Image 1 (cartoon, rainbow over the protein chains, first blue to last red):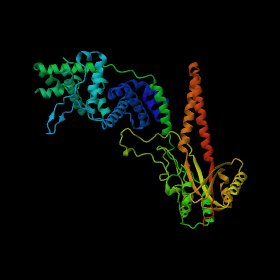
Image 2 (cartoon, chains in turn purple, green):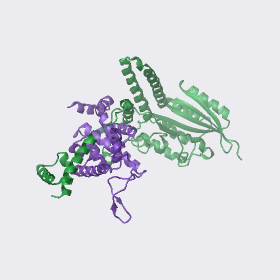
Image 3 (cartoon, rainbow over the protein chains, first blue to last red):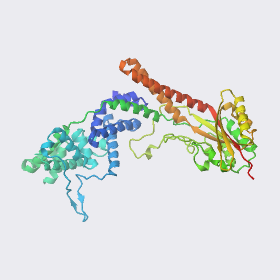
Image 4 (cartoon, helix red, strand yellow):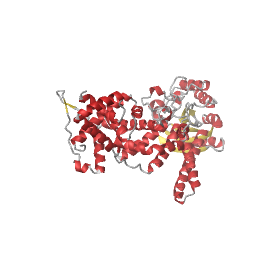
Length: 193
Length: 353
């Protein structure tokens, strides 16, 4: 039994100290993941707390066929997407990657009211990071997840399939479409050659 | 191969998850297609940009915050999952049923609550329909209650003010873990069964007695209380006046379980008594919370004391105060569950007609 498996077993018996050891190993990554989903530090904090509490509560459903870390990514992804869905019901956000349907039923490329900074400002690392975040926030949840998990968190396709609870084929096609949408936008802003 | 097909493969190609055959197709196409070459280059650059984004540092308070939330969560999870109402010895059932008959109330008639109905409704009993309880019903319920652990004294028992996590409701006395198959969320599971906490249930008996004179009757009730076991406590309420001019005085007596039958019998001689109504107040959840918090805080104190650091002193002091608070709460619940609370309503009715 690996140390991680032992810690999971102890946590299952209600040993919070054991669970906190697991938390210590993953908290930075989970926080970073939640930050990309939520787009700000405050929500990232709340959502990663929530994810760990939820994980502790439902540790029994962790069957050990993936690593605890991958399972934690899954719990966090679900917590964040649930929260975003909940909020979206209240605030309609424009989508970057979904064409807008007109009354006649035609789909037209969306003209976003572009308040984003210009290229030279974006090149400052911090602004760039924020700009990328604003683009991510405009994407469909499944495309956003794909970019975050693969390009930012650098998970493998197998891990992504585990986290997103879908097939490798689905991971491949979602990621491909998500990247295409983002690439177009960055080219348009002359952020890619 | 056409550009559209190749473009779909560029993303997996970048991640090196395309197979040998696909690689050959892609590379052959890229050799002759400036456009797709450019696009692959852009995807590579985008990937490089994304994986080098600066991530914010996790705040230092994160682990500490989570620590307390986990302790709280653990308490919540430690719900006594096979909690059943403890089997009663039958004393209270016998006493109540007997008195109901002694009071001369016909079976199936309702308690005459009328104008003083509101007096029965304290914060533990807000629904109107609880004011009327068929006496026959009470008797049957108590008989069933004595006869079987499975059957519960339905309306007679109340579990007021309980939080949503409290699994013990009258309608559903035996706690079943939620069926995982019914859960929408794929990571939700039934709570851990880590420990058991002894069920704590406080019995409250409400007893209404019509009397000729309030002052004299209160003294008699106090005397009866005083004559019973020494640790009985007596608290007198204020005089209330009902719509029809009748005055009511509430006397609360905390009686050890062994004395209840005797005290109820003696009280029935004070005046014309109605059937007593019993309520049960579920304290198990509160008790469990008090016990677990108390232990968690003490663990924390021990840990900090073992470290022996100067800067932790203030925190230890504050934890000790919290520990005292929970300890008192624990003791209070133990006391409440070990006695029966008799609420005696003495009603003096003015001559009406």
